[in-house]
Amino acid sequence: MVYAMKLSTLLFSSLILLMAACSKDSAQLTCEAVNGYQSDAITVSEEPFTLEQSGEGETRTLSITVKMTANEHISGITELDPSNITLDDDFCVKIVSDGIEQKLKLDSDSAKTAFVSLLKAKKGTEANIKFSAKVAKDDAKKTLNNAKQFSIEDLNVDLKNITLSGNIGKYPVCMTINVEHEGKITGAYYYKRMGPGALLYFKSDYSLTSPMTIPEFDINGNNTGSFEGTFKDDVFSGKFTTRGNTYMYSLRPDASGVPIDLSAVPFDSFELPQTASGSSDSDGIDSYDSEASSSTGSADIDDLLDSYERCIDKCITIMRKAKNNDPTALTDYAEYVSEMQDYAEKLENVKGDFSSAQLQRFTRLMTKAARAAQQ
Image 1 (cartoon, helix red, strand yellow):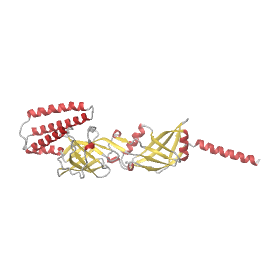
Image 2: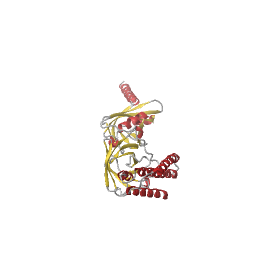
Image 3: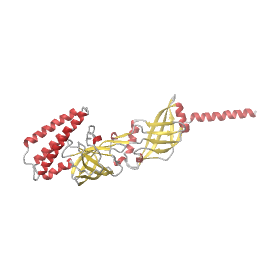
């Protein structure tokens, strides 16, 4: 009788354990780490999170909803469309278990949008972001039974085609900037008076989260100036130096701006200087110098030189795209023909004589065109 009672108790206990094992479809987890270039952009709540299993059959879904808080909006820019932000393809939540690891991806486009919105949100913004993954039944069971911690992996964020507008000195400019999570910065800008055919370029290996110096280049890779400043409270500001002269600048995100096409720009061929002093002349500021010379030179000649420079820059762009077999070179060629017609009309109707400053600018433009032709 006693033996029978002990046996029945043992069977009952084992049944309880079996039922508990079968019914366990969640586990408590805490965040171990957030790893990645923008890891300081968010804080994950210290409260335990629940890892849940759902579904039937041989494949189950593991899901975890993580409460996050924005510490600082990404790189100081809040007015971004999610389409301007890309996450590392390897980005995931990794569940730490005994003998097995599971990586959970964002489970939908809406979740990705929510996460990206958090990354660019203002300080203090909270969001619940859901991650999930399809897992074999046996693996799901092992993970649930052993999971204790999770970590956020490869939180690496790239900014693409961010348009900015503002002033360098008193001169209005439009800018497009790209930032890769390794810290590589590339971009281009133009002075509004001269138009997008007269581009200047920049690149750097510094992070936007700290003060930085970004060298400026012309299309031939000559260092023509440098930006020194920071992104803070939606403003990219600091000082721009060229030819020993300094101009304060301030630019903000401009959602209405049209991004500059940077696909054919040979950034890899631009060598970063040891010090970005801007020893050469900045074509942008030089072009504005012609305004001051108009009192002694002809305004018609200023317009003529502007058109001439647009033609040169457009021709250089077409040459580079054609060399790379870029089909958009044909579209650019149509624009180039239009620029040439504009230049021809101004050449036919130009009045007045060259001032010394205008003659110097014309000489520089001829040199620029000659260098491009030799490449």
